[in-house]
Length: 187
Image (cartoon, helix red, strand yellow):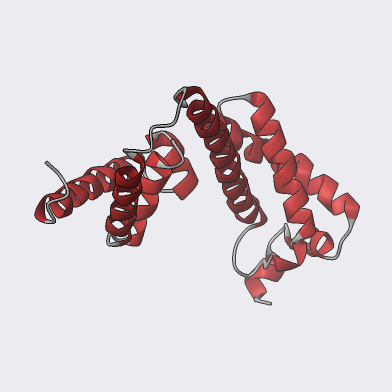
């Protein structure tokens, strides 16, 4: 342990938490719960969802408390990182539910098998083209199009500035368009 870690005022609280002291969990929740809730509310927009994310964040933190290393960062930073992942999980679940509902509503009365192979080929080509993009651009595009996240939601999930998110989407789309035109995949 570093000398800086021992001098930090939250060190004894963090050690009690890591050791499994339920009172330390209560103190950490009282101290940092509002910050976790604020992050979730800002991204999700509803109090009920933000409360659920806050609860799952602290449950996950308690279950994984041995992984917290005070020498690597603050307790608040660690909790907010967990909260971001829980927010992403919530957004993805909501997007999945919306896609399923939309897909069910859009089902034709009788299936038209004539266009199905073309759609499968198009999806495979697009997946291959996305795989050619830099990882950060690909992740932003996947969050935007597959998970139906807005630009501010993507910024919150990825911890990227909003302008960077928009630039990644614009550049990624331009690169996809260029690759598909070169490959003859776009008209």
